[in-house]
Amino acid sequence: MSSTLTTNKVEEFVSHIAENNLAVWNELPNIRKSGVEALKNLSFPNTKDEYWKYSRTTKITKNQYKFDQIDSANINLDEVRVAGLDTYEIVMVNGFLNTELSNLPKNDSITIKSFEECTTEELTTYFSQNLDTITNFFSALNTAYFSEGIMVIAKGVCDKPVHLIHYSEGESVISQPRNIFVTEKNSELSIIKSSINKNTNNYFYNSVNEFFIGENSHINYYVIQNYEEGMNVMSTNVATQENNSTFSAFNYTLKGDWIRNNTNVFVKGEHCESNLYGAYQPTGKEHIDNHTIMDHIMPNCESNEHYKGTVGDKATGVFNGKVFVRKDAQKINAFQSNNNILLSDDATMNSKPELEIYADDVKCSHGSTSGQLDEEAVFYLQSRGLSKESATALLISAFLGEVVEKIKIPELKEKVLEIYGME
Image (spheres, rainbow, N blue to C red):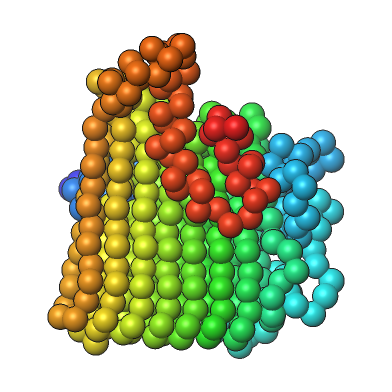
């Protein structure tokens, strides 16, 4: 009985989205098929599933959403632009590409185009190659009903970063952008992802980004999540690495009602380097969840993973990082660490670092710490003339600063330090 009720709720949720904008779904029907079929057999994620144990999704799934293409005449993007940094800009408004606001490149080193402009071979090669649409409801939902698809292909060392800006506005709106980033052999690309939301309420942002890092290529991916009220965010990132490649992802979360970040890296080449760094600072009743998978499939590779967070008020933080080392992946160095500070008695942190190793010639470690701010350190700083608030802020800055310092673009580092109040 309950199973039937759940199925009916899923069908109602999905059908409302599908019927809301039929004109969009009729485009590229072939690449949407796997998502449409998967949704017929999936239920809403719940806390009985270990993968969703600490993140309730009822806040999202109890609502019905509409797609909304709004007038962009009065949109101002200056608050997320990085002072002194020249970038290409891809601007998405409620999940749809806005070419008037965008600043797209016109050179041979990088190509940015919509899925409608891509060849069948490009879409077949890259779309949903390692994305879990079989068991992951939200990935299947995006695959079936993405609002806009953008492919970025770097064919050399890109002369400046690509700034992906998402603007969100409205009530009970769903935004489902889909992006594919490809670096061909001997290429390099830096991507910055920023978001702005205005007058949002019960807004659901469900994005999927796929990365394909070619031989001897590099991608640096920086995400800044600094949302005003009314935003529920499901962000899925999947990276696939070939020989001698480097993928580095940096995630900085300051504000957001409900945020779930899934980052999965599949290391399919030898002599690769993979880096995942994150800092988060939920307060109030916010919920921030970072889930990562680092899958070492080939030998002679290294991965580094370090997430740090401070959790205050009645907020909840989650970290679940899993490292796989497959049978043939010998001589792997894999390091994973999660460190947290709880700033109140009502704050909650759930941390679960995991290793699953099937090879015998490896160096792997993982660890997690969660505790309160060092009162002796606070007292010492107060004895040197600082107020308790200033002393606390200074210690938090030093704690999170270790991860912020990993940013390789100086202008962006200054921007993130400003957002976190570490100037």
